[in-house]
Amino acid sequence: MRKPITILVITATMLMAACNINTEPQTEPVTETSAEVSVTSETTTEFSSETTSVETSESVLDSDCVVFGHYEQDGNLDNGPEPIVWDILDKEDGKMLLLSRYILDCHSFIDVSPYARTPEKIKWHSSLLRSWMNKEFLNNAFDKDEQQLILTTELKTEKNPIYNVDGGKTTKDKVFCLSAEEVIKYYDFNLWDEERQSGYSQALLAEATPYAVSNHAYVYVIPEEEARGFIEMGYTEDLTGKEYSYWWLRSPGMNNRSVCYVSVHGFAGWDYNYFGGMVEVGVRPAIWIKSE
Image (cartoon, rainbow, N blue to C red; front, side):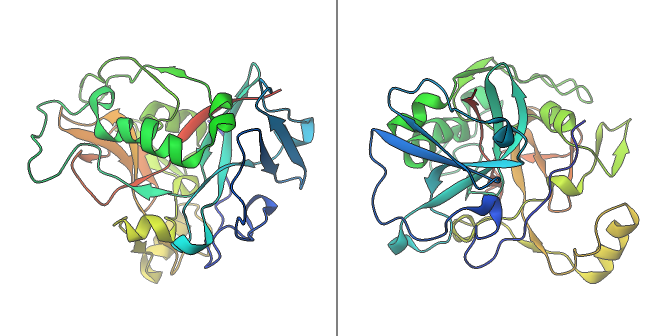
């Protein structure tokens, strides 16, 4: 399992500390012929519409994150969308797996509009969340050049080994939610229950952007007495008063109507799930992009 990723505190200006990016409002739209990827080493990688991969130096690949695409985050629509910070989860064969550092939006897994019919089996392949991520989010967050660098990934959503619930059909997506299996693979856990195949990991704690909160992402403030208990589990001592939110995974839960997700305490795995119609769960998109 991967070394825990450092969690940065969201401030009013949102991304000031993350990846050393420029937080000045975007005054001009990104053209269809160029784009930028910023990295923690304070270098910038440029690519054009003719580029076939993100040209990254070794120092870039050693960094914790990259900046790629733009999405509304601070909740101020007048200053334009902010750069998206992505944690690097994996690097292999000229590509990188990225997960948004912050919860960028809030969206139910299935359609919960008043006249929608709840499906008998809630699966990633037929979910409204999958459709939204690969259409609305993809087109809003990335220009045409950036979309060319996002790989279409074949995703097999494994069955839940605790409850023997099928994961659904294999899909081909550009944007997706991590699976419970991937979370267990890429993150270390402070406390792990082998029987439940679930555990607590401070590295999984995630803060929602002001924009995601405005779209009904639930926010939980860690009280002092709870923080003391988590410190005993190996969490850091600065938890009191921190604000965290739930975020979706794509794996099936304990039955065909539930889905795995990550709790406000960093609890996740195959035995943590809820009804797919819950509307207060946030979204941390994942993508594979080309790199060199």
